[in-house]
Length: 301
Image 1: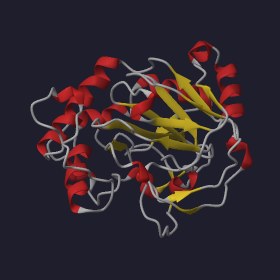
Image 2: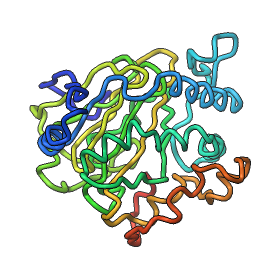
Image 3: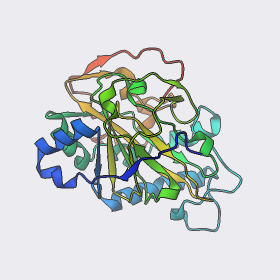
């Protein structure tokens, strides 16, 4: 079951009407700590990436045979949890090598919004994350947490979450506690789920959640409390991406510019790409304010 009971929930508020009002967009971001946009990304581009991720799942034997690939039906005898275990790592290295996965993080539809929020140039972190969540694994649903404890660097880092395919409520998704970023950095405790850390939050805290469709995007301040929702389907994988962004002039932790959670180098990620691909090392000539990561006993996120 989910890590906290939500007794006070409302649907997401679509911030799309504010795309032509940068001051209003910044005001909403400052007040709520999250922004939701219907159809911000090109659905065809997202669906094509979904196909590539599911082909990778199929290659590793994670999908049920005899059903359409794009349904994302998990093999009934397979349940692999994101971790440093070999089965996950081998799969995830293949995911990180997908050019279209890395490129989606640089989509102008995303960076254009965040330029308005930040009021300056955007640094997209290159440590892009793809989540593959199996059914019947609700004990590993990500608990309420703040991203900053894992990311470090500037607190003005924002996470962008988007599903690879429609994400109805029973498939899970994200719930966000608006305004909780104004409480500052909270104490953490050990917990199951990605990142391995959670925060305590009163059960009457107001939350927003809802069904999310292909191309929809949720943006989260690094201090706003949010949590995963249980995938309670019988057999469907939930696929999503986490991308992170910050003002270019702010400090960035060095590991935020490294491949996520595998030990791969960028040369290994890019090994089969075209030599002149503009996505490769896009940040190399930028002037970055890089700081060293602190030791975190709970590992990567």
